[in-house]
Length: 111
Length: 115
Image 1 (cartoon, rainbow over the protein chains, first blue to last red):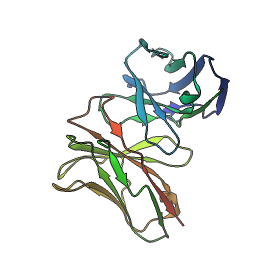
Image 2: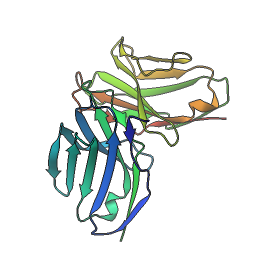
Image 3: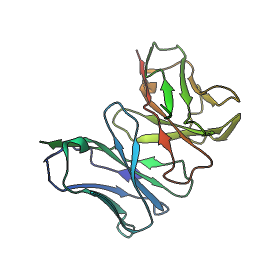
Image 4: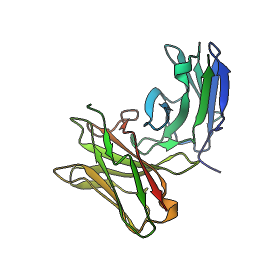
């Protein structure tokens, strides 16, 4: 079993929809949970970062962590075509740099 | 552009040749990290370097791969005697000091194709 599982999609939604992206993990030692956005042929850029369980909101983005279920989510409200990208979840025990990434979910927001 | 700079962006090598990938960190950053993204896989941590020091190479394959970050110049990831399985995107990230989670800034990657 991989440490981080993420459905690769693709996921296609109409503009304005609420998008839900998810990852599961197996290592209970993970404490830090991140979502990165990666446009085609570009590097990952950090979107959201959460420590331990709970919710965090930043504009149209909300990250949720449920450590009891080993499940994390990213919600995107009022999705825009510019949100079309691959979304990567990443987790860390406490190193600060040895992140464990999911494969990424490809999202397409259609006008 | 003050971001993490990687070159070449694309590199084609035949089996048995050597590949050298370069990474210049963001201005003011002295810590560099290399990740590899194999096809259909997530990014995997390879190595963490500071100037002239390898801090953590726990993710580096045991053979043919090496990395350096000299006092002057970019960090270099070197792959000797490449095989088809080395075909991947190699990403470099940097941080100002010892990274706290979420403080890594990634470059756009170097895509290696081995024929």
